[in-house]
Length: 211
Length: 256
Picture 1 (cartoon, rainbow over the protein chains, first blue to last red):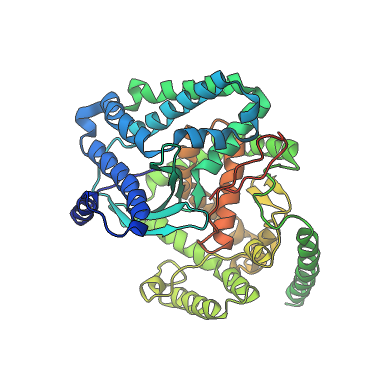
Picture 2: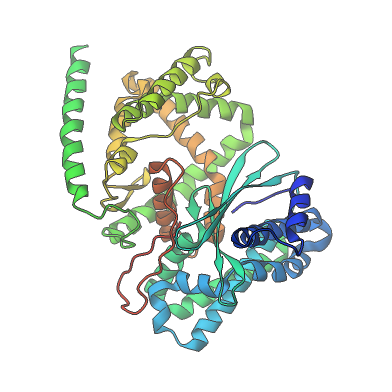
C-alpha cells in the first residue's frame, strides 16, 4: 500500500469533536469508535511522514509501534492469515507468528511512510455491515490528484475495543493477499521457513539503504 | 474485403459458440471465484510464471524503465489514452452484453468524442464532459452472467488470467481497430502498448516484489481480487469468513 497523506484541518476538528467524552445516541457509538481508530492511524502516519527526515527509520518505527499495535486486531488477523494451518500449530508457534507478523506490519509502515508530499486523507463514509463489522471508507488524495481508495473493515476485538481487521486498497484486500501468500509458503516450505522469511523482510526494512 | 468478412463471420460464430460452451462449463463450477483457494493448474502455472518473470526481469522491465526515463509523463499519458481508446469498442460491446444500455450509450459518446476531439484518442476530453472511462471485458460479462473463474491460468507472455477471462484476449483483439491494420503497423504499435502498460505497472510490481514471500501466490490473489472488484463495478460484497480451521482441508475464504 502506498500511502502518503495529509489530514485536512477540518477532519482534525471533527475528529476532536468526536473524541469528546459526551457522545451522541448509543447507536452511533460503535460507528464513531470505528471511525476514530482509522482516523487516529491516519493522523499518526501523517505526523510521521511530516517528520520523516528527522526521525529516520528507527524513529518512525518507535513512533508508529504503539499506534499500529493499538489500531489493528493482530491476534485475529494472524489467525485468519494462517488459515487452515493454525490448528496444527502449537501455542508457542502461535505466539511466535503473532509477534513476528506484528513487527513486520509495523516495520512496513515505518518503511513506506518515509516522506511527505502534500497528500491528504478523506473519510468518505462509515457503513455498518450485516454481521456487525463496520466498513470505514476513506480516500488518499495524492498531490497530482490521483485517488487511492482505502476501505477499512473494523470489528470489536477480544477486549471489546474496535480494531481494524482488514485494509482494502483499490479493491484489493490485504488480508486476502497475505493469506494466499503465507499459506503458500507454509504449504511448500513449512512453517519455520515462513517465520524465517518474515524475519528476513523485517531486517531488510531496517537496513540503512532504506532510509 | 471478402477475407475480412469471412474472418468476422467465423469470429462471431466462434465467439458465440465458445461463449455458450464456456458459460455452460463455468455455471457448473462454483460461482464465486475466490471460494476455491485451490489452483487446478498450479504446476503449469508456476512454470509459466517463472518463464514470464525471467523474461520480465531481463528484457521487459528494463525496457519499460528506460521508456519511463526518456519519455515525459505527458507523452506516456497520451499513449495510455490512445490505447485505452483503441480498446473502447470492446468496452461498449460488453456494456451491451451486460445489459448496461445507458452505459453503452455514454461509452459510445466517449469513444466518438475522444476519437475526434481527442485526436485519435491521444487526449481524453470526454472525461471532462462527464463521460468517464469504464472497464468492461468479456470475462467480466461472463462473471456478471454467473460464471465463476473456471480455473486460474498463467499464460506465457500474457500473464495472470483464467478460463473465464482468456477468451477476451481474442475478442478484444478482433474489436480493436489496430487488428485490421497491416502487420508492419500492428507489431510495433502492439509492442509500444506492451511497454507502456508495463511502465504503468512498475509501481504495483515494486510493491509485490517488496512485500510478497511467494510472488506467484501474491499475484494470483491480487488478480482474483481485481477481477471480482471489476465484475461488481467497484462494489464487491464485503464479508469475512474464516476457513474451517478444524478440518484442515482447503477451506473457504472470502475476505474483502
